[in-house]
Length: 509
Image: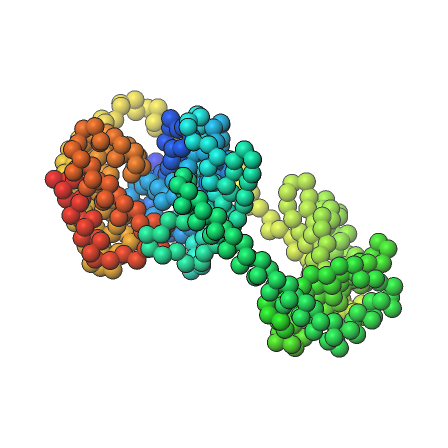
């Protein structure tokens, strides 16, 4: 009887205070290494807490810029494993060239909540980085931008080489990155490398100038075809007869006879434009718009009797006009007038209007009335009183359950995770298998040495003094192969994965 009362009271609280039972959410934290001097690598890691007990596809957006050097993740898709805690390290360490105090921007992670089915975004906090002056000066710097979402993979690096007397800037772009290739700019001190870099930059500059000239030639050819088109010439003459003069134009060519365009005109305070698309020399979707046309349609709408009645209804309820939008079309245009009140509620009047002033399909949209939750509070207050009374009568404290401490053998646990990675690879989940193998080694170090969610470089640095060179080499090779699958265009293969498993077994056993 008491148990049923408790369940009933909990249901009451969930109804009265729905915000209390909020859905679970991913948590992300950005971390980096400390004690940095110029010339060191700054490694970025995102630490995730996944409460859903399942793998979740995520999209990462993250900017990590230190002076003129860094990594900009515009969009990156990643499958977060079904682990409570996961660390994701970027394969592009940032070289620290400038001393000073810097702040890395928060990382934004977008995902679909498995419990609610809605898309959510979470952010890490910003990270402050302090860099002290070392020996390195006047080095080559650059910002690498990565986009890898929706099947589109692009990478570009803007390189700047600076010294006390001169500076050079160039941008290198690539749509396909080969396996094992590192496009992150690294400093080079030998005369041969400097000479080769200068020659490479000169070649890229010449190629960019050639592409720019080709683009200009395409634009000029497309412009001729647009302005010689009969439909365009007719609309252009109409505007000029109305007193409009050409102002500027925007032409976006895709070839000599294909592309989008927009020509703008001015007449005092009034403006107009002709826009459309030419496809293989044929005109498509050409339209003419002017502020005078929009004002004329506004007069038709706002003088309509039905509109005026709807407008008065909203005004009497405390709504004020916040915005008006007219989507101008050739024969009939759509409109939406938006309203809001002091309580934050929104309403709108929508419909269509013809060029002759006929109003069609006009409708008023108001928010649904909110449910009076205070009525539920009154109804359930007696039940709450009964529960509290019975609770006060029974003062005996419940016996707390005995907590069972379970010991997990680090070696057995790590080997079990490694066997799972082998099974995942054999079942076609090659990339996930690499990540699981890396987790097995990290889990072993965390349980045996107290290394808590460190990057690959930090783990290798920590074991250098306590392990022999062969052991450290196994750890380094294992992490290097596992990390290849994260941000490089790397195709997993059985030979490399077997090497990862062999290294991992030697490390754990």
